[in-house]
Length: 254
Ligand code: PGA
Image 1 (tube, rainbow, N blue to C red):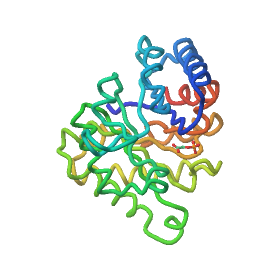
Image 2 (cartoon, protein in one colour; image 1 turned 60 degrees about the vertical axis):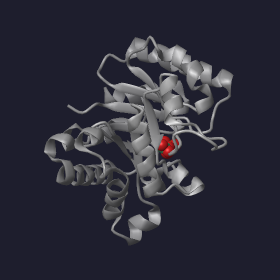
Image 3 (cartoon, helix red, strand yellow; image 1 turned 90 degrees about the vertical axis):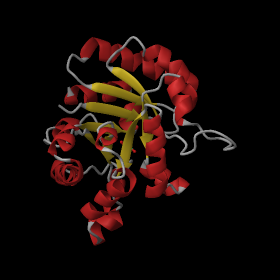
Image 4 (tube, rainbow, N blue to C red; image 1 turned 90 degrees about the horizontal axis):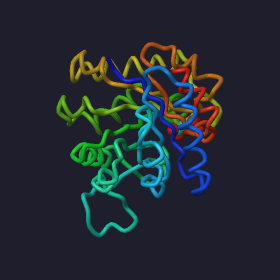
């Protein structure tokens, strides 16, 4: 059975005090209110990971993710953070290929293949993001575009390696815009991606792959989105910065 996951991508937000307050609130709410089987993942700025790990270590439902890692193992790469460093401080997950990284930092499918490799080599679980722009949705084979992102960054993996990857489908036109994909649009893409994975790795691997939806997931629309059979959870940006909204989303997935 694939995991149900709700991940909160804080992006470049929150000072230390704010990060501590938000984490404490989420930990308390999850411990008090979430009874079901859902993996909660917080993705704070990397500078807070070590500190926040102490806040979540006694909450088995909550894990931490980095928002990125280097495709290099170590060395003269000023400003970068390696997968082995993340592992060494007890981090389990890493978000890779977020559309903001692709757009503002030029990350390519080929470079992301390298990041996925090094994350897996270091025992991290990649949360691999994919998704099309508005222009692509209107003018191109948007399903083919997203399938190709997966092919080029992930399909070199062995079946065992692929089995460790979480996918996050995030249509770029829905990120931070308040425009959410309808549950039909999300389901269409998720089912197509699962079929694509099945074509390469077989039905069992595809059935066990968690595919999250991201793009303006909020307290009001989470339940409807998560009701689609191939939507296994969410990667939540803006709404993850508010503990009550984020907890409501988690409860919609449990
Ligand atoms: P959003 O961001 O929920 O604010 O649209 C989602 C994301 O970028 O992961």
